[in-house]
Amino acid sequence: MSGRAVEVSVVLPAYNEEATIEHTVETTLATLETFLPADAFEVIVAEDGCDDRTPEIADQMAEADPRVRHFHSDERLGRGGALNRAFEAADGETLVYFDTDLATDMGHLEELVESVRSGEYDFATGSRWMPGEKADRPAKRDLASRGFNGLTRTFLRSDLRDHQCGFKAFDRAALFDVLDDVEDEHWFWDTEVLVRAQRRGYDVKEFAVDWEPKGDTKVDLVRDVFGMGSQIFRCWWEFSVQPRITRRVSITAGVLMTLVAILLMGQYLPLERVLEHMRAADPALVALSALVYAVSWPLRGRRYKDILEELDYTETTGFLTGAIFISQTGNLVFPARAGDAVRAYVVKARRSIPYPTGFASLAVERVFDLLTITVLAGAVLIGLALTGVTSVEGLQSTVLGAGGPDSEVGDSGQTAIYVAFGVGLAAILAVAVIVASARSDRNLVRTVVSRASNDSYADYVAGVVERFTGDVQTVAGDRRAFATVGVSSLAIWTLDVITALLVLAAFDVSLPLATLVAVGFFAVSVGNLAKVLPLSPGGIGLYEGAFTLLVAGLTPIGASVAFAASIVDHAVKNVVTLVGGVVSMLVLNVSLTEAVEQSKDVQVEADPAEPTDD
Image 1 (cartoon, rainbow, N blue to C red):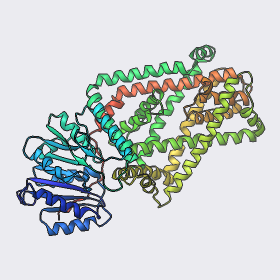
Image 2: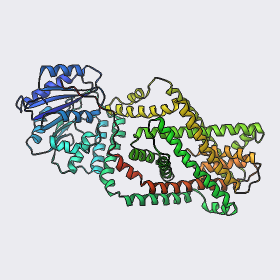
Image 3: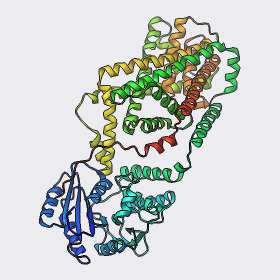
């Protein structure tokens, strides 16, 4: 605190403003003097981790004029973060901020300040969209602004026309009452403050201003599309959906999700044919296959535990197995593997594991899955050729040869083989890149992101990506961890193959055991690689197509039997997953909505640098 009877505190968030900061401060002081006593205000330069001469210039101005204060941060906090810290240390009861480029005509400053200082309003904001305003906006920026404000009014029920104009004033008590719930610390900070203020019943004044963009300002895709859109969705979920979610609703939604998954399976798989062949199959072997597949799930939980321990998070195998069950159940229902996000939410909400770490650990798991399946397929293929079960020419004929009696299966199977080859190659390349980068000191993430955007939000995104890739590299760079997770992955996918072999054996196929095992390993591995991509040519799943083509092409087993076995195999695994998912949701009482609700108060951030009050 300065000890002066300051009524108004003006904060100028500054990042690399060496060319303009001195002029901005001088203009601000001169304008305030026209309607306030000389000792009734202060100007705070909230310098946000600058790497130019802005800190030096701010220090000089603070030494020359006691009404000027300089807050320095060694780390980038984002505009909202810098404003929060400066407002907390400010002396005034009326808090003001505006952009340092002075895009808004300073002739409006008195109206802005007095609207709040007089007690008539709790919040005041300039607007570039009110009748009577004068604003010269480039077309691209104009379109982005209209779209953002339209979405905010529609989804967040705001009465304001312009939420992002950098020209605002706040009553101190009202602002800090609202800030208790404001989560964003970047470019969405303004919008969230104004929306929450309206929802709490505070009086908000919006008035037209003359505004002209300064400098080489441009629409930022990283910030405006990804950042702002996700924040609108977050607030909409909190305001409109979350209050309606109760424990009963969450459990009911989980059960309904399971029923939907079963209905989708009915559309995706020809269940009539499955039932027909299951009547002829050995039910004991089918049941045994389900038991074997169920045994693989605790191994999945154990593997996930090993991955997280490398990232300094220790959790129980039971909890992690349940989290995987829930996420995989979501993957059966939602497109584009949306269930993967469920796991990140669950471990964040229940165990405070940061989202970047949650997704990074999932990425490690996926890479090891693909690499293990690829190695299995390659190794078994070599074994098939060396033992004479098949040959390169025979495999080429199987994969490239046209149809036969089941041409639809043949076409789908060929497509599946091509997809599997591409996915397998990508897995090998991904592992090579990760391992190589783990042993390198070079950091390309921030360089790549900064080429797309030099905005502070992009800097924040770069930090998240760096943490993500760093976590992935941590596991890949530790040889012991790499071997441990690799062995676990091999055991998991071996049980997956054994499940399929038991199903195939249930159809009373007459094959030597060695041939059945070898072809089964190859067919299941290729089928799993193929189904990574959500393609379904001819109405048949890629897993079923690849499995049928390889089993029928490399053995005397008929295509219809191979196809039926692939469907039963897939159905057994999906049913086990669904049952495990429902049980896990009931036991852990978690769902995506519950996880979002519980995770909103969990913030894992780096400790901010202490400010210097010069």
